[in-house]
Length: 317
Image 1 (cartoon, helix red, strand yellow):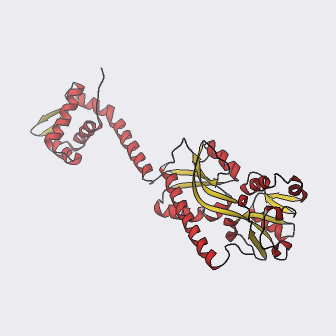
Image 2 (cartoon, rainbow, N blue to C red; image 1 turned 180 degrees about the horizontal axis):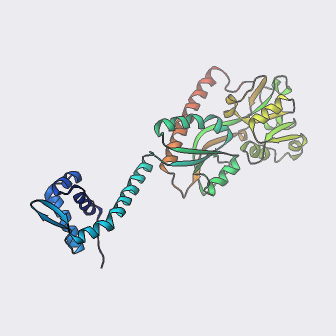
Image 3 (cartoon, rainbow, N blue to C red; image 1 turned 180 degrees about the vertical axis):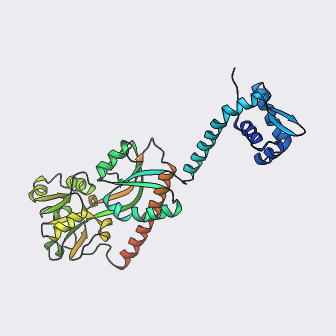
């Protein structure tokens, strides 16, 4: 025998037990007393038993009603808690999100976006994993992170990408370096020098290797230092060990005192940074809220860069 018992009659039954009155229970449920009585009667008809004895003094549970109460009280409470929990998640009142970020965006986009997110959703928990671009793509694909703030350097059918902003790479060198005399710089200009590059897996390294692919002798002629962190690259430049190429986005957050930075003119020295996630996974409400704050911060960065570009070079020479 198949039964079809809906939530509302069960809630009516529990309210009647809690209040001891159909009238008070009807008020709690927000219906008229006749409608409430009809809910209880329909439930009794479905179950085939009488749940309440009704008289002029009020209502009392029958033996069947007491047995029914013992069996449904906890399941209905669990159902209501699950419902409230999902509503909280949908409204981003609780929950957590794990995202990945490039080191450059961790310096620039992530902190203000987290501040805005906390102001809007103070109970939300966020974990940010910093990694190079290749590693972030892998972590997205293997569900280690919900989305990445990264660059999509090659088309991928399984990944979705929402652009945030454009970024260019810049050569960084001491003020007295011979490159300072050049009006424009390209990959081919920095290649012959001692290079301090971010390690393989980073977007700058991938784009450099790709650009130098047809000039292997030039690309490998200079001794290079592979480093993980941009701050390390800057310190090595200060020690006179070579020059480095870093994302322009991160330069305002680095100590470039005594150094010069010049954006590379090559089209291949640019990348689009955005929110990268799997196409077959919808972002959670928490992740969507964080992505929205990142988009707002990126729009602000673009506006500021536009204003600076009109008054002075965006990257100092």
